[in-house]
Image (cartoon, rainbow, N blue to C red; front, side, top):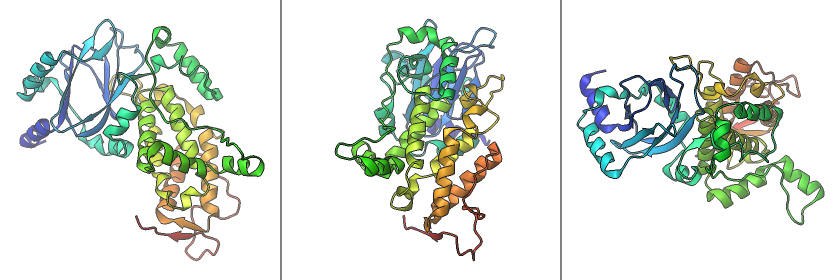
Length: 388
């Protein structure tokens, strides 16, 4: 990179200045992970906007790692965030205001520049596709008290939550790890996610009408958008992205359950995809699964990070909740007489992704593949391009 361009990026980009982080600690930001060396003091050249910083302390030989701790931060241009490693608690903490200002001035004078690892801008487009709906307000609304997201505080929270076989296996995996010790004494609260009911119950409604409400989640989606999100679909998508990132990068089971709830809500709608809410569907989930299904999720030290550290192939087996949801949703698009062109395009891409990466086969109800049609096929749904 040209030195002048690099200097401009350093000056205008944000910086996470991290003091006294032990060697071999894993420190990550967004989709990037660093293994701390003896000279590491943080990350520079960070674009403005939402970011997720996460870290995991290690044993002295760098072979075993503690549960990940992460936090979201919306940064402004040239902003400097200072954190210091607490040896006793093995986590990053804030410093005194006077000390913070002193370090910020030193960073601005480039005194620590050679100790700061550059943000890999070639990966920024991927991060944007995973976080483009996350705003400062969304972070402040959902993040837990203190901002830290860690699975170490979750076993108690998840105690009475219904779980699938795979989720129970993950729960056992977490109990066997180092985090089970700290979980018993943890006073930390979880994230403030929107409550999404699994089963719809309404006074005065029963029989076929109640069954219809549970078969088509459109009414539930619309009521949640009005009640919880001020009518904004962008806020719902922001929470969907927040939960996915907290799960994949932060290894939070609570976040996975929320992500699953929102995906189940969206793919459980049979009317909303074909009306004013069509843009809520598929695109965000496509980019999430595209990233989550990547095989190479290990850092340079060989330590596994991200989703692959907690999940195995059973999460994406043919009898998983995701397979059933996608199969029903693809059939829904196939059988529709009128489909938004953008929705059809992203549905096709999602279907290809799952078939190519997981080998899933989605049986159609006819000999015609519902996602691919010949131009003169009289049974193909009409594709309607809706105005934004």
